[in-house]
Length: 357
Image (cartoon, rainbow, N blue to C red; front, side, top):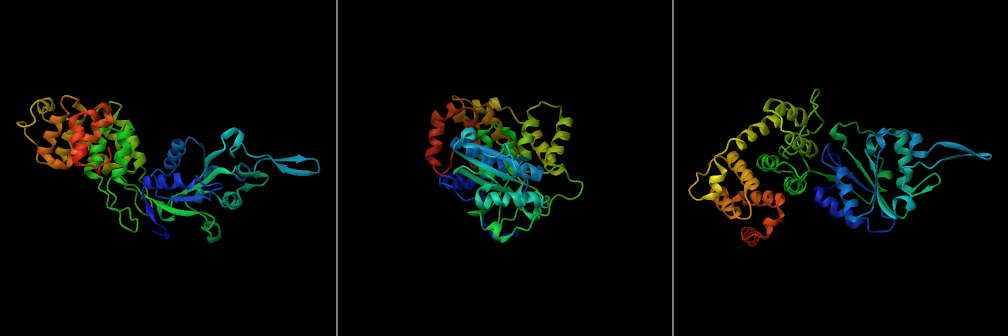
């Protein structure tokens, strides 16, 4: 990691921002992080949860006139029209988040204008409403994503704090279960997406959830596995494509290696023993010994069980691999909230009070 800043998870970033923006004229915060980790989504989620304004500005696509406004003649003087994207309390609300996205990818002329807004909460004649907070976001220089600029110490010091945001497998699974991500995909990430982030924030061992390499993608590598691209992969799985076309689409989404692994896993999911028989008699049905098949079986059971059969599904999973009971319960209750009133769910929560489902 090129900076002496701490690495935090997306959930921790949301927790910090939620507390931070309750201050009047709160100082800016900078979220650094690799490509595809969801920095912008984190900030939007905070604004949505607090029901406050949200404006996301992609500085890398702007010209200087977009930031300072168009000049006009005002008597004997020249002045500038205030750009429409800047927050106005009467139009956008008294409180909100102004996101300066891709700050370090912007040309120097844009960064210079943005720094005035960061330092003084002003831009020419414009003043940022007191209840609005600036959040900057950018890839890191080592991500080889076009980051430019000097990271001037005087400018960086204007931020209340800096964080390096890295993906977390358990957090992603929780988010995925709440947002309609394919259960087979969640199961695959659970199986292959082990989280081994080191204290230095090294992403090389983050598992298949995020395979964007330090230094950026090699030449010719367009598709790569990231939290953002796995969400797109879930959309592909919902299209009902034939196997060959689905494989090609997934390869163009998450890359050749990750898509091949996922396709193999899906093949297991789609060729399992009679799940209906398992839900009727979980004690006599054979239990697979191979870990990928166990994950696949837990996923299919989560999709098929109901209030009458969830206890049998849990019995079978505990016979097969007790560690998968949390996966089954997470997927099943995400699909059907009423399962949380079953005795099977109540018993599970009593035995696993530390698991948030």
